[in-house]
Image (cartoon, rainbow, N blue to C red; front, side, top):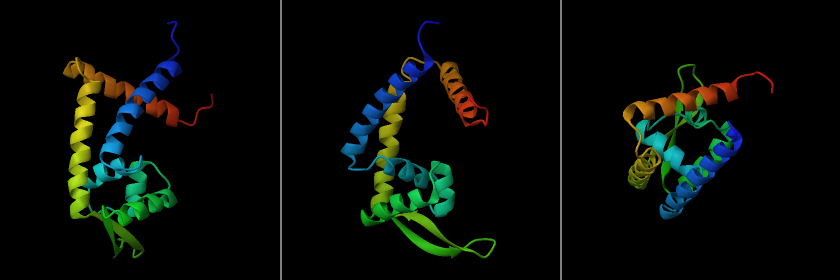
Length: 144
């Protein structure tokens, strides 16, 4: 194989980021907000800590993202007690947030269809399996 994996990965990443940025701008969202909206569309009312974990960001980063989303009226937070008696904040979509989350979902469904155009169902499954294996490899503790 003459091509280098990292170059192809960077090329793919850049092409996807370019298309994603168009969607972010169209919906007037920051880079971090679509993922949060997409996740809350499915699990509205999760805690900030859970949301940070699902989004793969630190809790302080999630707090910053949510502060901006609250200012934009996409979400609201309610204090709650967890099962172990600790205080937490549950995050919910506002009406505006629900509408925008549906727009995010719709736009990224279109983008996914574009990305996987011409792929059979079996090929699509294989692509996701490959992505998962690459992610596992990169997240493993083995040194380079």
